[in-house]
Image 1 (cartoon, rainbow, N blue to C red):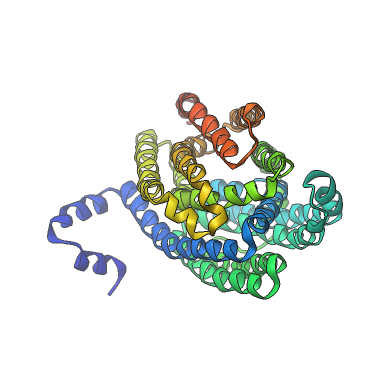
Image 2 (spheres, rainbow, N blue to C red):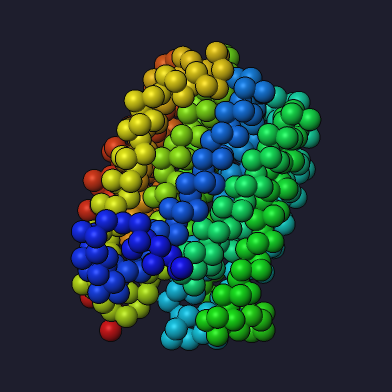
Length: 451
């Protein structure tokens, strides 16, 4: 029995007209199909991730969990440089050309892959050699030097994975991405928990490295299969022909990403340098795991938004484009609310599960639930800007976000986990309406210029 037949067998008969209406609309069917597989992969993978985070936090303690958080934040900050916006580049242009010009889609896949290895390799070496200075002078924790150097390998694999996932999203291979997410989640759980049990914080970092390596292998095999299925050549021949997209699209994407990641990392660095900072970082890191939970499904679904929007823009189909934006905006916000409400209701129990030292973080988690819903509303706005090629506007908005985030935190006292959550709340509430207005203007301009 296939998935469709299984769903029809399980659902009550009065849902049948709804299923028929979904199937009757090609756009809604594409969206529903992608949502189904994104949800399927997210539930188990993220559930295991949350359980792993609780166990790891209990074994490491509040300060140790804070150290793990700042390592992840530092790798993430360098990862924006390493990724060079190539995941988004692969998604947009493979989606745009896979049916109209498969050869060009193949060249862009190859270009994004090769350039990802090059940029991530260089950036990983920079992190490796900068680790002693960063640990001692920026993070006030010289004992983290070796762990940051291990993180350089994690950085390499994570950046390349970003380009791979972007390519799979460009093929709209959402079912494949969901399966890989599931298998990666199953691998990550024993590797992280077992790593901490046998080797403490070092074991946790190595666990993430190995799990990311497994993810890379699965992505690599899947991309070859999708290229064959879509009749897109899997070759590197002539890929430099399309190098212009690196400067016109990828470079603005990486600049925008750097504004985001650098401001996030700077915020975390300000926190850990405050009195009791690593303990407060541990509290925020625990609460942030639930931010990932709340946004996991919206972000997973958003991976299919950019390729579909790019495809519709290429066809000049404004009606379906607008419909996609409205449906997706509502869906992502509602999904975030549905996930955030139970987390907020059980916030005290959730934080207590991490250990006695984490109980006072309940208010931090409540703020995380609140701003995560505003974050979800911003996701589709960002996809609209990138699908229309409004890279300059996206860079400006990313810079404004960084200014609001760091500026608001600088005035908040004391510098603790609640303060950092409050800074994010101020930022996402203030940005939502403004970005929405600008995205509408961007769409109008793009369709006027589309032949």
